[in-house]
Length: 244
Length: 303
Ligand SMILES: Nc1ncnc2c1ncn2[C@@H]1O[C@H](COP(=O)(O)OP(=O)(O)O)[C@@H](O)[C@H]1O
Ligand SMILES: [Mg+2]
Image 1: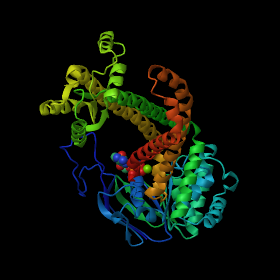
Image 2: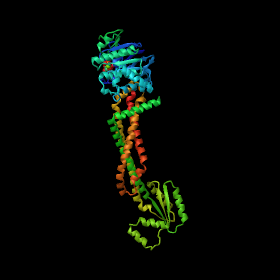
Image 3: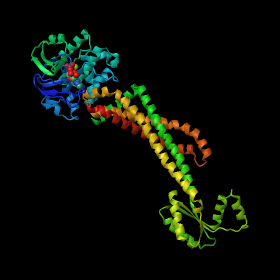
């Protein structure tokens, strides 16, 4: 279970002089430029949740806080009753292995082959070699990339790269998969392949948190939709549609 | 677990070393230049200090006794001097030895030779003590100490005639020493900075990868490890290459140095200390590689 408890994230504003420090408030009409403001969300296991909103609404920030790439200015975040926001740097790798992360720009390691990119996640987790030799081809098969597993990222198409990234996210068998606009750089055919993969992953029992601003995807999914606007949750519907 | 990780770290470092051929080569070249400067300074300082030691050895005081002075008296003074902290060695020269050394020293001075000849084979000189200080600067105070004691049997202390020459020579020696040290430090510092910046640049290009590794659950050590191992590879390789490159250079330079300073046999010194040299070069290279990697990676591990 994922729980965002009244989470806010304010970035220091560089352009303004420091004397005009950011005012921090949850008041309705207060003009505050914050990435997230008072966000409280509870996501149950095996849910498929879409986070939608215009560009700059705070979707990426939300996911960044979930894998502790950044820390919230206020509030707490829990994963399975463990407070992520209270963990020390030493404990972060362990919690990150419970969350498979997928990004719009793939974020593959350019110097490693598809196979090595996937196996890296297991190596970092300290898995024994036999397990790695078994699991990596398995997940590469799921994403349909067995034939290109010895290619480097620059030798793969966008869709193929994203499938490597998904394989890497899956290989640790995490409870949660988070995807930040995973289809943002893909053509329609590849987009639907990725969406179908995410649906399949969810059917296999993983929680999926998908940030997107693609109306077609959201409407097609017909699952829970959380709408963000200027850092606030303005709508949270089971079986929602994309309307802004 | 630890061994598995270590094995993976080394394998990963080796792979990236091989795949980043250009970057590896560039880093090794920069490290090589750094080590070349440091190694060159090291060899130069060997030459310089053997010249200086040679010079220092020539700076001494001779204490001439009157002919026929009591030998026991002389030995008592000798022991007294040897006990002093500032004195390195005291050598006793008998009357004959004193004459031989004196003649040798003044063989180009016709007036001295002529006046010696007037004695028609008789030895006008007494025995003498030859005193070397730990540090040439201290000779003056040894000379003053001797002058103050005003031994009856002492004919003459040759320091005071040569005082200015000796003092000047001592000053030159100590100036060369400290200037050389400053030069070595400054040049080494610059060379180290160059190597460090090469590593920093290489790791800067990898900052996004470091971020990715952290996000997929790698610990700091698992990310840092390959960079450190790569540092070891770069350092030891460049150390070995530079040490080997010094062979022909020293071989060519050695005869020219020996021509001016016959006491110095640089090539002989180099070949007999080659493994020590190789060890020092590789150790500096590895230390430099590991240290600069550690510092450069640290900044990007904060995620
Ligand atoms: N590192 C950062 N420094 C300053 N402001 C940031 C940073 N990251 C995001 N923001 C700001 O936070 C807001 C939300 O950004 P983001 O979460 O990326 O939106 P989305 O993913 O929904 O497009 C934006 O206004 C953005 O400019
Ligand atoms: Mg975004």
